Length: 348
Picture 1 (cartoon, rainbow, N blue to C red):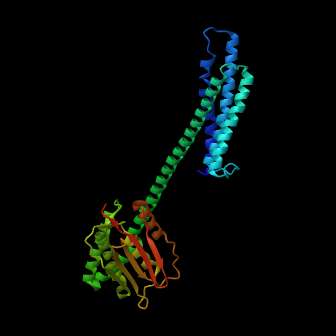
Picture 2 (tube, rainbow, N blue to C red):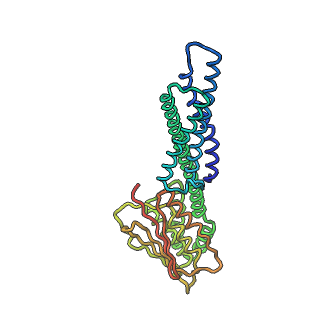
Picture 3 (cartoon, rainbow, N blue to C red):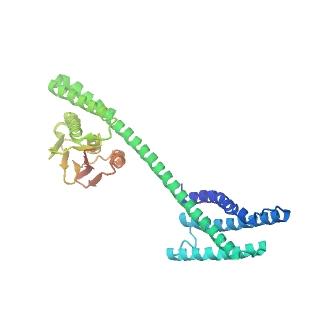
Protein backbone atom coordinates (compact mmCIF):
# COMPACT_ATOMS: atom_id res chain seq x y z
CA UNK A 1 0.00 0.00 0.00
CA UNK A 2 1.20 3.50 -0.82
CA UNK A 3 1.55 6.13 1.98
CA UNK A 4 -1.34 8.11 0.45
CA UNK A 5 -3.61 5.06 0.51
CA UNK A 6 -2.62 4.27 4.11
CA UNK A 7 -3.29 7.91 5.03
CA UNK A 8 -6.81 7.79 3.56
CA UNK A 9 -7.49 4.48 5.27
CA UNK A 10 -6.21 5.90 8.57
CA UNK A 11 -8.49 8.93 8.19
CA UNK A 12 -11.47 6.69 7.48
CA UNK A 13 -10.83 4.83 10.73
CA UNK A 14 -9.90 8.06 12.51
CA UNK A 15 -13.24 9.84 12.37
CA UNK A 16 -14.96 6.73 13.73
CA UNK A 17 -12.38 6.57 16.48
CA UNK A 18 -13.03 10.26 17.28
CA UNK A 19 -16.76 9.58 17.63
CA UNK A 20 -16.12 6.72 20.07
CA UNK A 21 -13.60 8.73 22.09
CA UNK A 22 -15.94 11.71 22.23
CA UNK A 23 -18.77 9.50 23.42
CA UNK A 24 -16.67 8.04 26.23
CA UNK A 25 -15.49 11.55 27.17
CA UNK A 26 -19.13 12.70 27.38
CA UNK A 27 -20.63 9.89 29.47
CA UNK A 28 -18.88 10.99 32.74
CA UNK A 29 -20.81 14.28 32.50
CA UNK A 30 -23.73 12.32 33.95
CA UNK A 31 -21.93 12.52 37.29
CA UNK A 32 -22.17 16.31 37.29
CA UNK A 33 -25.77 16.64 36.07
CA UNK A 34 -27.25 13.90 38.18
CA UNK A 35 -29.57 15.10 40.92
CA UNK A 36 -31.70 12.99 43.25
CA UNK A 37 -34.81 14.97 42.28
CA UNK A 38 -35.80 14.48 38.65
CA UNK A 39 -37.17 17.41 36.64
CA UNK A 40 -37.77 18.13 32.99
CA UNK A 41 -35.69 21.30 33.06
CA UNK A 42 -32.77 19.46 34.65
CA UNK A 43 -32.95 16.71 32.04
CA UNK A 44 -33.02 19.27 29.23
CA UNK A 45 -30.03 21.11 30.67
CA UNK A 46 -28.16 17.82 31.15
CA UNK A 47 -28.75 16.67 27.57
CA UNK A 48 -27.65 20.06 26.27
CA UNK A 49 -24.52 19.90 28.43
CA UNK A 50 -23.68 16.43 27.15
CA UNK A 51 -24.17 17.48 23.52
CA UNK A 52 -21.90 20.48 24.03
CA UNK A 53 -19.26 18.27 25.67
CA UNK A 54 -19.56 15.73 22.86
CA UNK A 55 -19.08 18.40 20.18
CA UNK A 56 -16.09 19.91 21.99
CA UNK A 57 -14.47 16.50 22.51
CA UNK A 58 -14.95 15.63 18.85
CA UNK A 59 -13.40 18.93 17.69
CA UNK A 60 -10.38 18.40 19.97
CA UNK A 61 -9.88 14.75 19.00
CA UNK A 62 -10.34 15.33 15.26
CA UNK A 63 -7.98 18.32 15.21
CA UNK A 64 -5.14 16.40 16.84
CA UNK A 65 -5.88 13.18 14.99
CA UNK A 66 -5.68 15.03 11.68
CA UNK A 67 -2.29 16.54 12.59
CA UNK A 68 -1.08 13.23 13.98
CA UNK A 69 -1.91 11.29 10.82
CA UNK A 70 -0.50 13.91 8.44
CA UNK A 71 2.72 13.73 10.45
CA UNK A 72 2.74 9.92 10.61
CA UNK A 73 2.31 9.50 6.85
CA UNK A 74 4.54 12.49 6.00
CA UNK A 75 1.84 14.33 4.06
CA UNK A 76 3.35 17.59 2.70
CA UNK A 77 2.08 20.44 4.91
CA UNK A 78 3.57 23.61 6.38
CA UNK A 79 3.45 21.97 9.81
CA UNK A 80 5.42 18.89 8.70
CA UNK A 81 8.12 21.07 7.15
CA UNK A 82 9.00 22.56 10.57
CA UNK A 83 11.72 21.25 12.95
CA UNK A 84 10.66 18.70 15.55
CA UNK A 85 11.07 21.04 18.53
CA UNK A 86 8.89 23.66 16.83
CA UNK A 87 6.22 21.06 16.10
CA UNK A 88 6.09 20.13 19.80
CA UNK A 89 5.79 23.79 20.83
CA UNK A 90 3.06 24.45 18.24
CA UNK A 91 1.09 21.40 19.37
CA UNK A 92 1.32 22.48 23.01
CA UNK A 93 0.15 26.00 22.12
CA UNK A 94 -2.67 24.61 19.97
CA UNK A 95 -3.77 22.34 22.81
CA UNK A 96 -3.93 25.26 25.28
CA UNK A 97 -5.63 27.66 22.86
CA UNK A 98 -8.25 25.14 21.73
CA UNK A 99 -9.02 24.21 25.30
CA UNK A 100 -9.44 27.82 26.41
CA UNK A 101 -11.58 28.82 23.44
CA UNK A 102 -13.82 25.79 23.68
CA UNK A 103 -14.02 26.05 27.46
CA UNK A 104 -15.15 29.68 27.19
CA UNK A 105 -17.70 28.61 24.57
CA UNK A 106 -18.94 25.82 26.82
CA UNK A 107 -19.37 28.16 29.80
CA UNK A 108 -21.24 30.71 27.72
CA UNK A 109 -23.59 28.06 26.36
CA UNK A 110 -24.18 26.25 29.63
CA UNK A 111 -24.57 29.44 31.66
CA UNK A 112 -23.14 27.66 34.66
CA UNK A 113 -20.25 29.32 36.49
CA UNK A 114 -20.37 27.24 39.66
CA UNK A 115 -17.34 25.06 40.55
CA UNK A 116 -15.33 26.82 37.83
CA UNK A 117 -11.96 25.52 39.01
CA UNK A 118 -13.25 21.94 39.20
CA UNK A 119 -14.85 22.17 35.78
CA UNK A 120 -11.69 23.58 34.23
CA UNK A 121 -9.55 20.87 35.81
CA UNK A 122 -11.83 18.06 34.68
CA UNK A 123 -12.11 19.69 31.26
CA UNK A 124 -8.33 19.64 30.77
CA UNK A 125 -8.07 16.09 32.09
CA UNK A 126 -10.71 14.99 29.58
CA UNK A 127 -8.83 16.43 26.67
CA UNK A 128 -5.45 15.27 27.85
CA UNK A 129 -6.85 11.72 28.00
CA UNK A 130 -8.25 12.22 24.50
CA UNK A 131 -4.76 13.21 23.34
CA UNK A 132 -3.33 10.07 24.97
CA UNK A 133 -6.01 7.97 23.22
CA UNK A 134 -5.09 9.52 19.86
CA UNK A 135 -1.40 8.69 20.40
CA UNK A 136 -2.48 5.15 21.27
CA UNK A 137 -4.52 5.02 18.05
CA UNK A 138 -1.45 6.16 16.09
CA UNK A 139 0.66 3.45 17.73
CA UNK A 140 -2.02 0.89 16.86
CA UNK A 141 -1.97 1.97 13.20
CA UNK A 142 1.83 1.83 13.04
CA UNK A 143 1.93 -1.60 14.71
CA UNK A 144 -0.77 -2.91 12.38
CA UNK A 145 1.04 -1.61 9.31
CA UNK A 146 4.38 -2.98 10.51
CA UNK A 147 2.77 -6.38 10.98
CA UNK A 148 1.14 -6.12 7.55
CA UNK A 149 4.50 -5.19 6.02
CA UNK A 150 6.14 -8.22 7.64
CA UNK A 151 3.39 -10.47 6.28
CA UNK A 152 3.86 -9.00 2.78
CA UNK A 153 7.63 -9.44 2.98
CA UNK A 154 7.23 -13.04 4.12
CA UNK A 155 4.83 -13.73 1.27
CA UNK A 156 7.25 -12.13 -1.17
CA UNK A 157 10.10 -14.24 0.21
CA UNK A 158 7.98 -17.36 -0.18
CA UNK A 159 7.20 -16.44 -3.80
CA UNK A 160 10.85 -15.71 -4.53
CA UNK A 161 11.87 -18.98 -2.89
CA UNK A 162 9.31 -20.86 -4.94
CA UNK A 163 10.55 -19.20 -8.13
CA UNK A 164 14.14 -20.06 -7.20
CA UNK A 165 13.19 -23.67 -6.46
CA UNK A 166 11.35 -23.94 -9.77
CA UNK A 167 14.33 -22.47 -11.59
CA UNK A 168 16.64 -24.91 -9.82
CA UNK A 169 14.35 -27.76 -10.80
CA UNK A 170 14.37 -26.54 -14.38
CA UNK A 171 18.18 -26.44 -14.36
CA UNK A 172 18.59 -29.87 -12.88
CA UNK A 173 16.27 -31.41 -15.46
CA UNK A 174 17.75 -29.54 -18.43
CA UNK A 175 16.65 -31.70 -21.38
CA UNK A 176 19.45 -30.35 -23.60
CA UNK A 177 22.05 -31.56 -21.10
CA UNK A 178 20.42 -34.99 -20.82
CA UNK A 179 20.14 -35.28 -24.61
CA UNK A 180 23.86 -34.56 -25.07
CA UNK A 181 24.84 -36.98 -22.30
CA UNK A 182 22.72 -39.79 -23.77
CA UNK A 183 24.00 -39.05 -27.29
CA UNK A 184 27.63 -39.27 -26.13
CA UNK A 185 26.78 -42.45 -24.23
CA UNK A 186 25.24 -43.98 -27.35
CA UNK A 187 28.36 -43.28 -29.39
CA UNK A 188 30.78 -44.37 -26.64
CA UNK A 189 29.14 -47.74 -26.08
CA UNK A 190 30.65 -48.89 -29.37
CA UNK A 191 33.80 -46.75 -29.68
CA UNK A 192 34.90 -46.48 -26.03
CA UNK A 193 33.18 -48.85 -23.56
CA UNK A 194 35.24 -47.57 -20.62
CA UNK A 195 34.13 -43.98 -21.31
CA UNK A 196 30.54 -45.18 -21.66
CA UNK A 197 30.75 -46.81 -18.24
CA UNK A 198 32.10 -43.60 -16.68
CA UNK A 199 29.31 -41.60 -18.34
CA UNK A 200 26.68 -43.94 -16.92
CA UNK A 201 28.21 -43.64 -13.43
CA UNK A 202 28.49 -39.83 -13.66
CA UNK A 203 24.95 -39.46 -14.96
CA UNK A 204 23.69 -41.76 -12.23
CA UNK A 205 25.50 -39.69 -9.57
CA UNK A 206 24.07 -36.44 -10.94
CA UNK A 207 20.49 -37.68 -11.08
CA UNK A 208 20.77 -39.22 -7.61
CA UNK A 209 22.19 -35.98 -6.22
CA UNK A 210 19.49 -33.87 -7.88
CA UNK A 211 16.77 -36.05 -6.38
CA UNK A 212 18.47 -35.88 -2.99
CA UNK A 213 18.61 -32.08 -2.79
CA UNK A 214 15.11 -31.27 -4.07
CA UNK A 215 13.79 -30.71 -0.54
CA UNK A 216 17.01 -29.45 1.05
CA UNK A 217 17.86 -25.80 1.58
CA UNK A 218 21.57 -26.45 2.27
CA UNK A 219 23.99 -29.19 1.28
CA UNK A 220 27.46 -30.11 2.51
CA UNK A 221 30.22 -28.56 0.41
CA UNK A 222 31.83 -31.96 -0.19
CA UNK A 223 28.62 -33.35 -1.71
CA UNK A 224 28.19 -30.29 -3.94
CA UNK A 225 31.79 -30.54 -5.16
CA UNK A 226 31.44 -34.27 -5.90
CA UNK A 227 28.29 -33.61 -7.96
CA UNK A 228 30.06 -30.76 -9.78
CA UNK A 229 32.95 -33.08 -10.70
CA UNK A 230 30.51 -35.58 -12.17
CA UNK A 231 28.74 -32.79 -14.03
CA UNK A 232 32.01 -31.51 -15.50
CA UNK A 233 33.15 -35.06 -16.36
CA UNK A 234 30.07 -35.45 -18.55
CA UNK A 235 30.88 -32.22 -20.38
CA UNK A 236 34.49 -33.31 -20.58
CA UNK A 237 33.35 -36.45 -22.38
CA UNK A 238 31.64 -34.21 -24.91
CA UNK A 239 34.26 -31.47 -25.39
CA UNK A 240 37.45 -33.36 -24.58
CA UNK A 241 40.56 -31.16 -24.29
CA UNK A 242 38.52 -28.10 -25.27
CA UNK A 243 37.23 -28.02 -21.69
CA UNK A 244 39.66 -27.80 -18.79
CA UNK A 245 38.66 -27.58 -15.14
CA UNK A 246 40.60 -27.32 -11.89
CA UNK A 247 39.58 -27.83 -8.26
CA UNK A 248 42.10 -25.87 -6.17
CA UNK A 249 42.74 -25.78 -2.38
CA UNK A 250 39.54 -27.60 -1.49
CA UNK A 251 40.94 -29.52 1.48
CA UNK A 252 39.32 -28.31 4.70
CA UNK A 253 38.75 -29.51 8.23
CA UNK A 254 35.59 -27.44 8.65
CA UNK A 255 32.08 -28.46 7.74
CA UNK A 256 30.90 -25.92 5.18
CA UNK A 257 27.53 -25.79 3.47
CA UNK A 258 26.25 -24.19 0.25
CA UNK A 259 22.94 -23.80 -1.56
CA UNK A 260 22.26 -27.03 -3.53
CA UNK A 261 23.06 -26.95 -7.26
CA UNK A 262 25.02 -23.68 -6.98
CA UNK A 263 27.99 -25.06 -8.90
CA UNK A 264 25.81 -26.80 -11.47
CA UNK A 265 24.10 -23.49 -12.31
CA UNK A 266 27.45 -21.68 -12.64
CA UNK A 267 29.00 -24.44 -14.77
CA UNK A 268 25.95 -24.51 -17.03
CA UNK A 269 26.12 -20.72 -17.33
CA UNK A 270 29.81 -20.79 -18.32
CA UNK A 271 29.31 -23.48 -20.98
CA UNK A 272 26.13 -21.93 -22.35
CA UNK A 273 27.55 -18.44 -22.95
CA UNK A 274 31.11 -19.16 -24.13
CA UNK A 275 32.56 -20.49 -27.39
CA UNK A 276 34.27 -23.88 -26.97
CA UNK A 277 36.46 -24.94 -29.89
CA UNK A 278 39.95 -26.32 -30.39
CA UNK A 279 41.15 -22.72 -30.61
CA UNK A 280 38.92 -21.41 -27.84
CA UNK A 281 39.41 -23.58 -24.75
CA UNK A 282 37.06 -23.00 -21.82
CA UNK A 283 38.77 -23.10 -18.44
CA UNK A 284 36.81 -23.43 -15.21
CA UNK A 285 38.42 -23.13 -11.77
CA UNK A 286 36.83 -23.84 -8.41
CA UNK A 287 38.72 -22.49 -5.39
CA UNK A 288 38.07 -22.41 -1.65
CA UNK A 289 38.79 -19.28 0.39
CA UNK A 290 38.10 -20.12 4.03
CA UNK A 291 39.42 -16.77 5.27
CA UNK A 292 36.70 -14.90 3.38
CA UNK A 293 34.25 -17.81 3.75
CA UNK A 294 33.75 -17.99 0.00
CA UNK A 295 33.73 -20.55 -2.77
CA UNK A 296 35.14 -18.94 -5.92
CA UNK A 297 34.27 -20.08 -9.44
CA UNK A 298 36.28 -18.59 -12.30
CA UNK A 299 35.79 -19.26 -15.99
CA UNK A 300 37.58 -17.86 -19.03
CA UNK A 301 35.59 -15.58 -21.29
CA UNK A 302 34.98 -15.93 -25.01
CA UNK A 303 31.32 -15.02 -25.33
CA UNK A 304 29.00 -16.39 -27.95
CA UNK A 305 27.61 -13.57 -30.06
CA UNK A 306 24.23 -15.14 -30.81
CA UNK A 307 23.29 -16.16 -27.25
CA UNK A 308 21.55 -13.37 -25.28
CA UNK A 309 22.35 -13.35 -21.58
CA UNK A 310 19.27 -12.87 -19.38
CA UNK A 311 21.16 -13.59 -16.17
CA UNK A 312 18.12 -15.41 -14.77
CA UNK A 313 20.15 -18.32 -13.37
CA UNK A 314 22.61 -16.05 -11.56
CA UNK A 315 19.84 -13.77 -10.26
CA UNK A 316 17.89 -16.71 -8.91
CA UNK A 317 21.00 -18.10 -7.25
CA UNK A 318 21.59 -14.75 -5.57
CA UNK A 319 17.94 -14.61 -4.45
CA UNK A 320 18.17 -18.10 -2.99
CA UNK A 321 21.18 -17.09 -0.91
CA UNK A 322 19.45 -13.92 0.31
CA UNK A 323 16.24 -15.79 1.18
CA UNK A 324 17.83 -18.78 2.90
CA UNK A 325 20.97 -17.30 4.48
CA UNK A 326 20.67 -13.50 4.40
CA UNK A 327 23.94 -13.38 2.43
CA UNK A 328 24.52 -12.62 -1.23
CA UNK A 329 26.77 -13.71 -4.05
CA UNK A 330 29.27 -11.40 -5.74
CA UNK A 331 30.19 -11.17 -9.41
CA UNK A 332 33.21 -9.70 -11.18
CA UNK A 333 33.57 -9.73 -14.96
CA UNK A 334 36.29 -8.51 -17.28
CA UNK A 335 37.48 -9.32 -20.78
CA UNK A 336 39.38 -12.42 -19.64
CA UNK A 337 37.53 -13.83 -16.65
CA UNK A 338 34.06 -14.24 -15.19
CA UNK A 339 34.28 -14.63 -11.41
CA UNK A 340 31.45 -15.58 -9.07
CA UNK A 341 31.89 -15.82 -5.31
CA UNK A 342 29.27 -17.69 -3.31
CA UNK A 343 29.14 -17.60 0.51
CA UNK A 344 30.19 -20.58 2.55
CA UNK A 345 27.75 -21.31 5.34
CA UNK A 346 28.94 -22.77 8.61
CA UNK A 347 27.33 -25.91 9.98
CA UNK A 348 23.65 -25.11 10.74
